[in-house]
Amino acid sequence: QSVLTQSPSASGTPGQRVTMSCSGSSSNIGRNTVNWYQQLPGTAPRLVIYANDGRPSGVPDRFSGSKSGTSASLAISGLQSDDEADYYCAAWDDSLSGQVVFGGGTKLTVL
Amino acid sequence: QVQLVQSGAEVKKPGASVKISCKASGYTFTGYSMSWVRQAPGQGLEWMGVIDPSDGRTNYAQKFQGRVTMTRDTSTSTVYMELSSLKSEDTAVFYCARVFLTTGSEFDFWGQGTLVTVSS
Image (cartoon, rainbow over all chains, first blue to last red; front, side, top):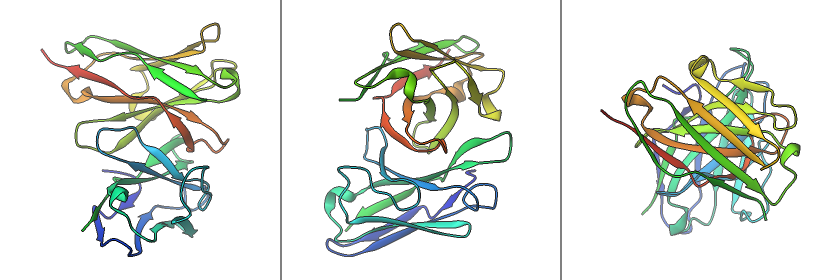
């Protein structure tokens, strides 16, 4: 059972905009920034959003992030087939002497 | 370019220990902390802990405290993760990941992963 809560699945058609959410608490998202990772099958995760809404070099501007209170969202616009992947949110949690916590992941299907 | 290259797959018996290496290149090794993340088959990501290569200080996830040891060798720019008292539930892919911001959960580069299979 993950500390951060994500919907297990999401879907969209090519060109659509999809959003996925990540819910936490005051000890993690409520006081720390959120990061999002994309994991294609059989590969290592890739950072796509950092510090709530930052985009690493090389990540298309179709990816955007936001945070409000104890929740965060990842949006992907202009959906493409190669966006099909698992997406994980992560944040630092100040409880238990501090640790990184992840969401359980959202599997994005491009129909 | 930044690269993290991990050691190869391992097969261990229950109760044994495993030690995985992660060799960094393309940046100042002591300038960034390194975390380890576990992923069981078909499951999500799980943070195990972090090591600061500049001084060797560590912070382990409570779940793994007492079983995990992270070390570094600055002469070879390599970090190590040793997990002891292995159980079948420890079968997973283990990743090293560079921490690029001080808040601790931003991992900008990842190793390729090391599969550890625990089986009698």
